[in-house]
Length: 310
Image (cartoon, rainbow, N blue to C red; front, side, top):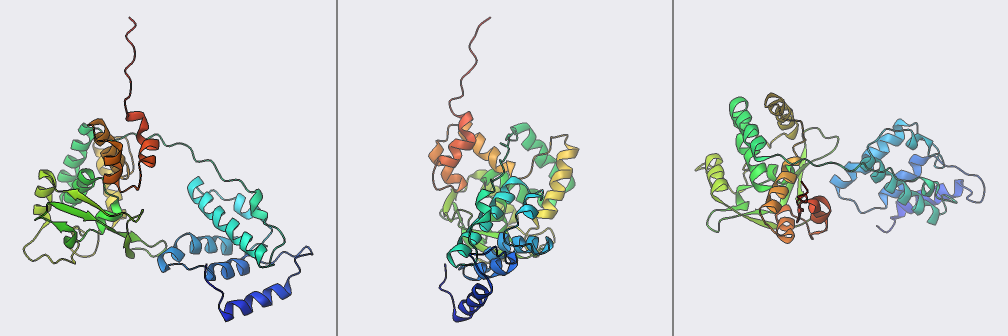
């Protein structure tokens, strides 16, 4: 947390003088929220994420009083989003209590929403073949990007942000160290940053990846140039356009819809079934340890056969 600047300290003092914590004071939530966010050492892209979106939600609710939590409980946010914003509101109120702006933290009594356990159904080999065939028939320009997702197990933002300087043909490896992530509320604007977990990993270029990269490569490619671009050849891949085509391809192939992220789960599942140890799978996915892999794919490890009874 940043040290308060003289300007912020002045604003805080003015607000504190207006409030009497020992009484039933109930200041507007937005005033406290803005003060708290300004004390945080946030990157621009981080501030534009849940912090800015939560502020818009407060404004939309009519800037309720700080002690009012009903406006938040009435929303229909998904559990993951709801819980993330609830954490911010709890932290904000805890800070306000230490600054004498609130006498108690009204958000402590609010419980997080339970997230239903997602049943992950990886794509089978047959489904994968039909998906690629569907793209080849209907959207051939999207085939290399789709194939790379299946072959690498990378997050979509990592593939979108992959530069030619990250591909080392001489050493036969691809460095996954950055992503090109969309900024919430900024339409097509993206920001280059490290991977989701901050990890750096090197993927070996097998024969299939070598063939794919050779197809999208050009003699004039530059090190700072994106490996995968929009079909027009300009700008980065628009994931929303891809998802639109993804939905149509799955429907035409009569494959039950699963979001593109399940490609990553499919990659991990097939790796485990083919004998790759958990440490290896965690590395390929960019996880710092095997905990997440074990929790998500533990049911695939040493899965016993049913006993023979009849």
